[in-house]
Length: 73
Image (cartoon, rainbow, N blue to C red; front, top):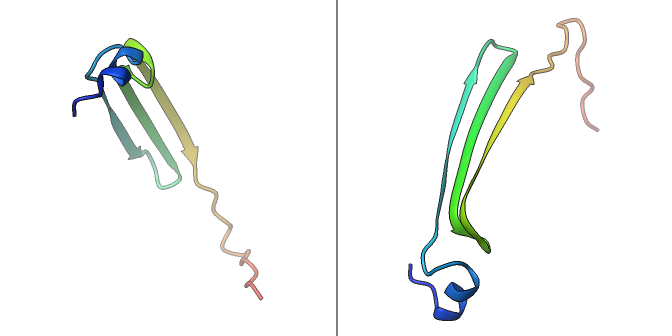
């Protein structure tokens, strides 16, 4: 999409690009991991290229079979 001249003047050009890649997997039934890579070029008032790598390792809490959650009233 073409940007207006005024917008392009304030945002480093009349084109910009952004995108990303997100990978997630379950390591075991209780542990999962995610890695996300994001990038941009001339976006959100930033001239040039930028990127970020985000990672997450999570555990799933499970109640022992002997403990039953209380029912909502």
